[in-house]
Image 1 (cartoon, rainbow, N blue to C red):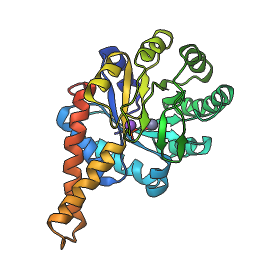
Image 2: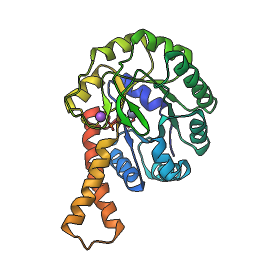
Image 3: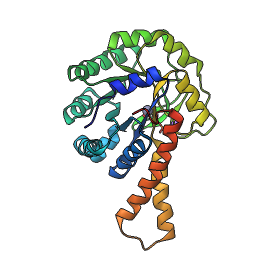
Image 4: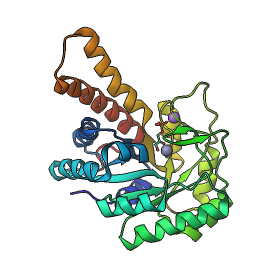
Length: 281
Ligand code: 13P
Ligand code: ZN
Ligand code: NA
């Protein structure tokens, strides 16, 4: 059955690797990510954003994730990514999500603390780990649109963790959601600085478009969870496009699904190897 993210992130922190957290949009992507984890014997986090939840509902994603986790031999967690309201966090907890994020990074420091603590209190009452975010990850993630990057201040991070009671922290170091028009400028030293003051697992957002070396160095410096979204969407959709170009008469959705699943599974395995979470289940 589904497990929480607590132990897998603490194990990653101890072991110096990161758990891959993969955004899934449908049954096929969800199955592909679990299949990749199974083949590499990796612990894994499936995650859905608010817009994905509106598309598929919390209950449907929970049911699909639970069914796949039941068959899997590896730990599988279902996480709410970028939870945008207290109400959505409560609904995810009610639906059976085993990890949640509340993203108050758009608010000022005090308001972020107030909102995040409210969500963290609810999650903790249910025994569910909660991720918060301080500083801003650039680019467009779902409905959030960030204009300029604001990297996480290490001293503020310490205070934020203490006052909210979150169990993992998304740290902004110059990454952005989506691909990069120009090579991103990453403040990797910032990870080391935050890690010195913050004892909970750190989370890297916006990993699509980062080189293997960049991801590896961020993990070495202390990122224990790495989020991948855009790359999976592109890989999934490209596989379907390719198949339709080869065979314009194709009408069986299962054929498109199989092509997408195969492509996503292979891609996710590559990213898991970079995170170093293979054979850590
Ligand atoms: P990318 O779309 O850049 O992979 O970002 C993923 C992410 O941070 C999801 O929360
Ligand atoms: Zn993100
Ligand atoms: Na990105």
